[in-house]
Amino acid sequence: MAQMQSSTDVFNFATITSTQAVHAGEQRFRSHHSLTVPIVQTAVYTFDTTADLVNYTEERLFWNEPEREEYGRYGNPTVRALEAKIAELEGAQDAIVVSSGMGAVTSTLLLLLQPGQHFILTDNCYLSTLEFSQNFLKRYGVECTLVPFGDYDAIEAAVRPQTRLIFSESPTNPFMRCLDFERLVSIARRHKLLTVVDSTFATPYNLRPLAFGVDLVIHSLTKYLAGHNDAMAGVVAGRYDLTTPLRQMQGLLGNIAAPQTAYLILRGIKTLALRMERQNAGGLAVARFLEGHPKVRRVWHPFLESHPDHAVARATLRGGGGVVSFEIDGDAERAHRFIDALRIPVIGPSLGGVESIVSPLALMGYANLSPEERLALGIRDELVRLCIGVEEPEDLIADLAQALDRI
Ligand code: PLP
Image (tube, rainbow, N blue to C red; front, side, top):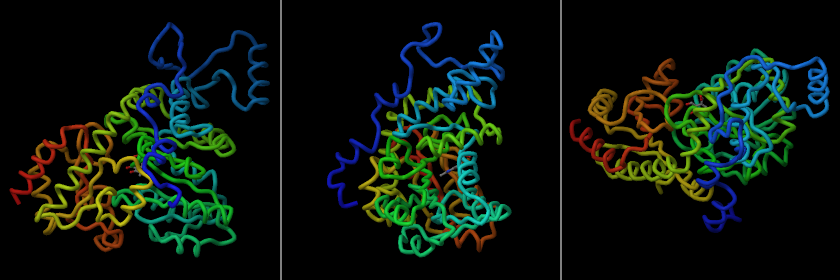
């Protein structure tokens, strides 16, 4: 990351402001003088005459993008408003909103990979992404090589004539490994490969992968972008030559997001910068507290000096985010007693919302793996993932302290 001398340089081009989070991609004047984006609750759009239909068809054939919608599976104005907002925030030509984060991952891989082709996946990624890549895609004759995160020589060594793309996450779930984009993109360009990065844990407030030369960025909108643990969707953003076929494929796969969901996420993004500032600060404060505690064996947060990717994280991220993974010094039983003693975070999966959530990962997300398979992924029974919400960091730290006192 040699060219990134000062963090200010990075922030100026690589992340967004609160003003952008509120206004990006939004039309100033809307029907009925509504300030907010209307929820257009319809499955069907009508035409006055057959001549309108002819014009619509010609327009669609010519521009590939009609000015209006025809049927709910092909588009919805509320969903399009969300797509326009995310495209602008990511610095992308276009964004496709789909029904979940996994919908974004799976449809991107299904679109870009054909039988006989191969791709490279960095490890320590979201488990469903790993399962889809390694197991499910095999039935379509697509091969995946898993390489250790951070080993750029291994990425290059894995390239074959059939390799089409590199898929990675930054920061990763659950150990917050962070990409050196310069190295990743230079390998990809040397071998004419596409790069796809799931940057759910960062959001465009902390990181904009496209600014580093990545081809497609993916998010689970369910997390920070929606921000309130009440909506589920995903997005893929990038250049038209990649997003246009993805949009066409969405009409066939039918993995669309509902208009109310799009509205909730549009609303959530308005406060993205405010929430991320709090969650960035809370995440680091909690990580530092845990790192200094004698009953905690190890802590992972990208802005801790002890994190394996600390230097790259500081060079690419505006903030380290609200997720802190850590091992209780002891066994599963001790870790469970600690979790049960917490008063503020709720026990559950997911992250990025206003409520703090604590996940015993061996029981949640990784429960269908054998203990050996979990260990191979670094998931020990005493591993805890804490996803900071927007509560006061000092309240969370006091809660963690009292729970640790009780074990
Ligand atoms: N990508 C990452 C990094 C995730 O953490 C998750 C979910 O936790 C997903 C994708 C999948 O998102 P969704 O649950 O919206 O399908």
